Amino acid sequence: MLLNLATRRRVLFLGGKGGVGKTTVASALALSAAREGRRALVVSTDPAHNLGHLWDQRVGDRVTRLGDGADGRLCGIEIDPDATTDQHLRDVGRTLRRLMPENLAGEVDKHMELSRRSPGTHEAAVLERMTELVETGREEFDLVVFDTAPSGHTARLMALPELMTAWTDGLLARREKSQRLGAAMRGLEGDRGRSVLGSSAPRDPVEERDEEIRAILLRRRDRLAGLREVLTDAEEASFAIVLAAERLPVLESISLHEELTRTGVDVGALVVNKRSPSGRGDFLARRRAVEEEHLATLRAALPDVPLQQIPLGEEDVVGPAALERFARQL
Ligand SMILES: Nc1ncnc2c1ncn2[C@@H]1O[C@H](COP(=O)(O)OP(=O)(O)O)[C@@H](O)[C@H]1O
Ligand SMILES: [Mg+2]
Image (tube, rainbow, N blue to C red; front, side):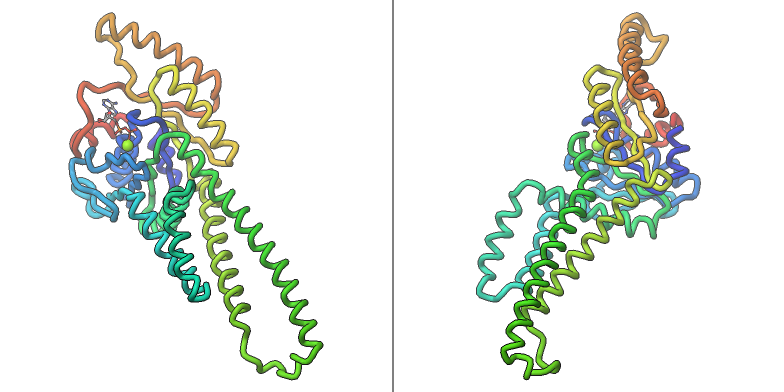
């Protein structure tokens, strides 16, 4: 069922609590896709990366082959949030310094230093990277699997493109209003003699700067709108919630589903991982019965979302061979 979801989409997101198996499932899905001849990229956005640990190799913040690389079709990347934030702030700072009068350069630096620690900056930077990876990933790969950070954070991230588009639109509207006012003022001045300069007068640097800020805001808005379009297109992208059959994870998954659906993101699968196996004695049989109760709550709340169960294995899933075996269960 999960494989089916991955075959029909180009972008998949895996979310859920820490330790439930997001990275394992993301890797196994990408591996299966690569074995079928599709080019697959796993993007880890969880600051607590474990893609490298799972594959038993170094990954880091650049596109790297995973395992034997499946003839170059299987790659992964771990987004480094601090490096991403630094890069993001450097870019924004450079633009600001260019656009602001020189005597304000010190102020710009101070502002950027504050921004580093202000809420939202980190998320905005990671979102920018995700946008970039969705754009380039869709050209260079047939499937991009996002292995995301635990629930609350991810749901907010998915809603961010919409919020930021609205915010940028608001800013643009305000700028337009003040520009119209500015133009009217200049018109008045013109009446008092400036018009003698004629149309060959050099462009006002303030006007030029405004124009550039507007262009930057518009570019950003278009990119975010593009990301949002992908996120909310159920044919293109889907979200799989990974969980354990326990009380709290079930309740959290129900609210994550609600939040995602409200944002317009398709939830294509519930992956109940680490199910206690049957036929392994009384203790596990009792555990299984408790799990069944929690699953009944989940099914009652979300009857229409396809659900896949994966048994708890005897050992951890580490290294390409173990992932290969894990992928066969999907
Ligand atoms: N079905 C399973 N059986 C046994 N171990 C599993 C199973 N799924 C995941 N694991 C192990 O559980 C641990 C956490 O999995 P991981 O994918 O890293 O979780 P997450 O990315 O959600 O934090 C890893 O050591 C992994 O090998
Ligand atoms: Mg992980």
